[in-house]
Length: 353
Image 1: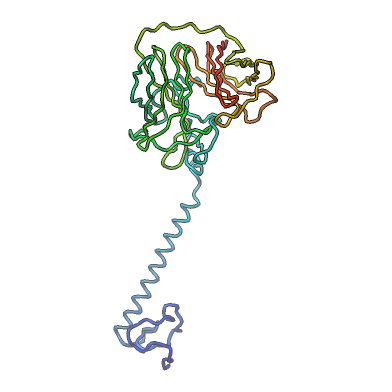
Image 2: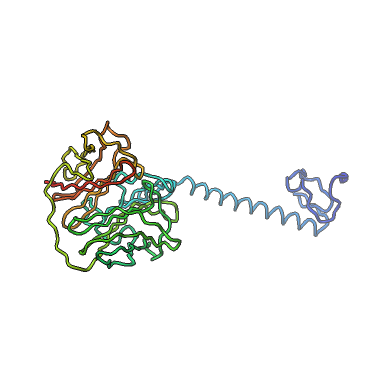
């Protein structure tokens, strides 16, 4: 059969329809061998048969590879491996936990990393969950203003520089004297190298402890809430003060803060605080750090730390906190509240049976 004007003319180039198998058996094109083995121009015939064989083998290999890939995609999940979340953050108990960067509640529904004795109190360790608190100046000067400086480092000893903003701040620092007679709630600023610093007013001599309360953002975007603690010292004459007697009300700057509720070991119990002015009327509370109050409780002895935030909606004039006592003993509670642009701290002693 003569070649049409659109075909090839024996130049050694394989025509498009040869790849598609358009030539019927027994119909020879110029320079092509049909399936019955009819003779034609040698070099072109070899090229075509070689190409045809290569395409068949290549197709078989591609089919095997595609089948293997589909099998991998549809394979059942490993039941021993927890399912990943969008950010890939892991909790301390092996589950997965995540918030979008820069957001998220401070309490992580049991996923917040616990440090220390394992009973729910935090801040008993300088290292936990792969993070370490490294103070730059563990010795302070009593009676003189100074500065507190520190870094948070990861398990590769690198300074951490990514933190989620929780309750309006990326870092909350509590500084307390070991006898629980002195208390500061500070918010430092971070330099580009990951060093945090905050001015520190004159403090009394004695043994102090600092807590760094933060949520670190890992390289994969996952978040881990951590509380780390370290001892500080202010050399000088130091005489510990006894803990005040337990009471459900406290007065500061003419305001009275009182609460109802009885904390229990291992059980979440509401504490309802009401703050009144000198006239007995409810104080006009203002939001402070995104809430109407912040409550920190420290256990006498080991200084186990509890940072509890209130429900977002007030119950009338009351501010409600849910507190779980990690164990029996005496606790000192510090309630921060704001009225007229001034933040005040009411202090309570609590005894848990």
